[in-house]
Image 1 (spheres, rainbow, N blue to C red):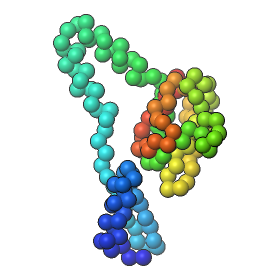
Image 2: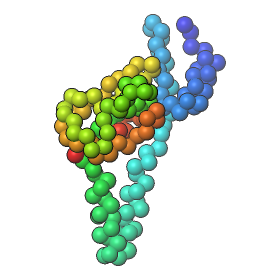
Image 3: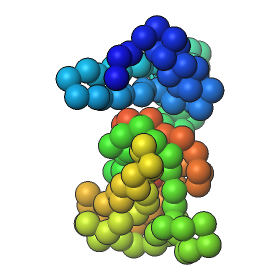
Image 4: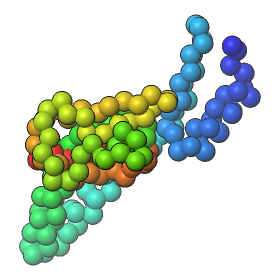
Length: 149
């Protein structure tokens, strides 16, 4: 298979149309990877907190209080780009729910990548305090899926 410019343009369109951040293909000794940069949304609150802290002592306490819940425990992150699924099938019960206690090694969700269903296991034991992603939502590498306390 030879990668011509028309084929690469089609791959770029698939990348853009499906909200993907990366496509990789290999054929024998040839390989191609297309990547799209994604802006980090987590950086936005940091500059907003600094002006509030310098504005007045009363508002300095509020960002500290809002920074506390942002931690929420230990994050479970996505090890890959893909689609988040909270249950093994659409009609099945979710792997975990908020308030549920889990053990290290328990399957907490699935991330589908290139038609492969990858079970994501908990790296620690604890209680699920927040699930940050909706079922069927695309996720990025390193994106927080849920927090364990």
